[in-house]
Structure formats: C-alpha cells, structure tokens
Length: 120
Image (cartoon, rainbow, N blue to C red; front, side, top):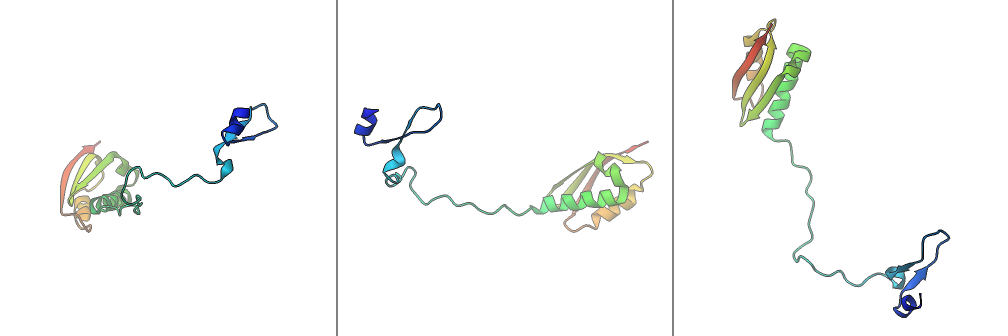
C-alpha cells in the first residue's frame, strides 16, 4: 500500500470484504480531455418525420380495418412513391371494387396494385 501513497494516490477503505481501491480522482478532476477526433462535438437530431409513403400506408391500413375489420390483418400493404400494393386474402363477402375505390380516394394514393386473392 505504500507504493500507492508514493504514487500520489489515496486509498479508500471500506467495511466490506472488498480490498481497498486506489482512486485516481482523489486529487481532483482529471486534466483536459484529449482531442481524439477533431471537429465539433456530435449533435443529436430529433427523430425524422414519418415519410409520406409510411403515412399513406398507415392511412390505407386504417381504412382497411374500418371497412373489413379483423380481416384486414390478412392483407399486406406496401407503398412506394404513392403506389400502393395490396397482397393477401380478401373475404368473399367484401365488395372488392368498392373497397379499391375507397382506397384510391385517400390522400397520397396515386395508384393501387391489387394482388389480393379472394378467400372462401
């Protein structure tokens, strides 16, 4: 322990079975932080806004849920630049064309690719 004191470090005792620990911070805060990367410190930007395609997909899914209820979970919706693709199964009891007409009226929907199959 004498070498710790000779090195200018203090020894902190504790009442546990853990051996004493040399504390380099006992002599005050460390010196300046070395510059390891240069340039300004990183900044954190707020989360990016939801993309327009993502917003359109959410709107399409909400409309599907409203129109066909839990059967909407069987339909995969993808949107790219306003082009909506629908894949999955549609109950036979649903008026397919009326549903597609309703979806085409949503803001941001430019075109619908209907790959839906009718389930029986």
